[in-house]
Image (tube, rainbow, N blue to C red):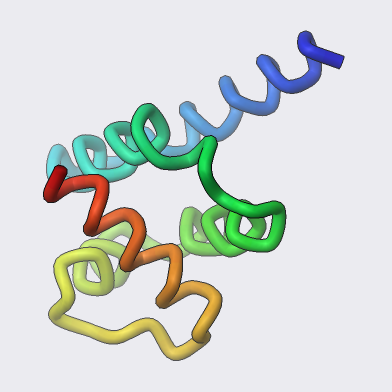
Length: 85
């Protein structure tokens, strides 16, 4: 069970590696500092967020564009909070 969790974490960490340094810092930092506190539903929303292309994802995370789905918006706020900490 713990091995499965570790493998899942490695897959998510790999998906957090992006083509933009800003995204790498935000996403990988959140994975270290905030991901473990997410509910199962929020984790699903985080994975959905990782499917966004780099430019739209950066726009949402930087607050220049709003996420339409409330579940995604909640996770975005948590990522921003973790980055500010």
